[in-house]
Image 1 (tube, rainbow, N blue to C red):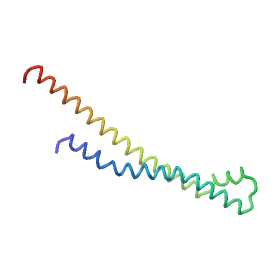
Image 2: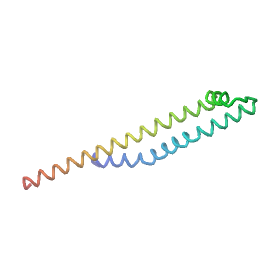
Image 3: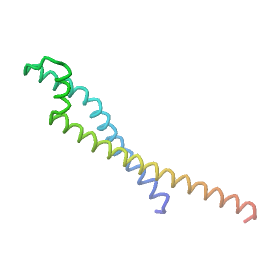
Length: 111
């Protein structure tokens, strides 16, 4: 297997992993809103009447902070995979350009 085939194989093997990482990132990003609402309700049930205080407590809650850590990890993973795929694609594009230049040069010299 040559270098380009290895690059394409690596790129393909990262597609599903990237999709899963991106889905996890998006899910956690959206769930963050639900978690805040759940925690605000929890603090309301505990007798907290002022909405801004419930919100502040929800943001400071260990469950919310844990969710943010998960979101950070999911973002890091999806971005890392996205950049790996971009690099592989760029390397394939460079290879294509080099091959086109080689063909043109061979045609120019009737080789």
